[in-house]
Length: 437
Image (cartoon, rainbow, N blue to C red; front, side, top):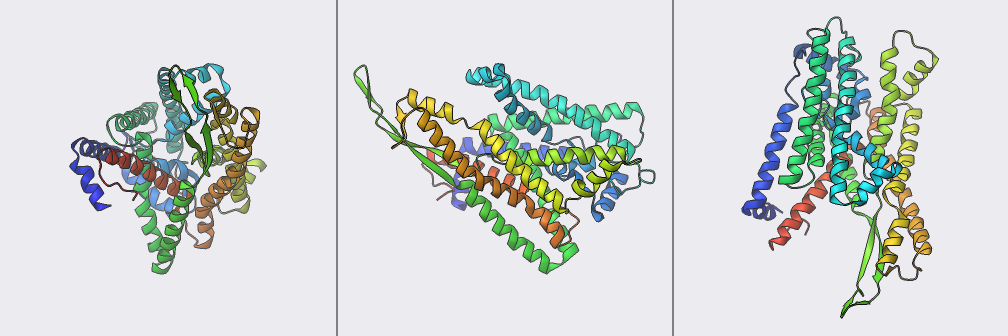
């Protein structure tokens, strides 16, 4: 593997791509450390220390994870990549619902360019909304629950000018992040947005792991590391697992040439939905908890119930709701991203068939049957992996985020495997030994 890295850097064009990616990552992490104008950095650091000693930091764990810890520090990249992720998910759902977007998707590269442009516009709109909400919470002192906002104000001034400057700065930071991600995709190696997400998740990993050692000691630290390695191995195994459905193409004459007669397969991954269901479920549970923060002064019965059962991540009702939402969104997302009817029609159009299955409706029914069978273990896998940090809170009494959380492990392993495979393919084109021997 070390020789493969050496070979990668010996290739001039591949070396330039890798160094370009590293330069973008450095710029990205630097922006995540620069405080936004008007933020009282000293008070923010004091409040973060206070919150980490309590149990309320988990409310913003998902958004803070995708910002690499920049959200609670109120930096210029505080929103991180989350607005783009949300916009991409919304556009994927709208493509299925709106015929105009579905027609654009079928147009090829030109249609995909327009959908990408719509994603950028929606990202900026969501960034404005999220920045407005975060700055409003910072002004009222509800961003970091458990910290006295009168004693440690997060902003130097709570006037309208400071409010607007912060919103514009954070929104502009999101636009810059989009641009950096697209630069990596065009001039570097791998998917730019995925690499930036990977960077933010990895940035918080060492601190979370060391926090376990400080609070629980070496024995618990060693047990957590061992459990983490087992989880990583299990995630790699499941992410690589797939059901291969054989497809045979009949021979046919086109002019004087014979085409077809080849064999291939349709790879159906066990985790066909990726990490999207986890993000959906986390976001859905995040919304009521976020709304509760604006009604702390006069809570009614509903707000008290949400505080008791949904905000507390260690409560069995929260865990059960989280698990069931992940299973539901897994089936939902797979159903809209993989269309058995479309696959069956394309196979029939080009003379393909599954051995033992008639073309047309029987092929569609067979694909639907196989997909539903492999989606169940994939959904259970996502649900169980995502419950690992919540169970860890209860077992080891950890107030900080568990470093080997389901979301973070899924992101790190998935992006790392995808990027290594792309480097591997480029090395194979140059007749070098690759990573995945």
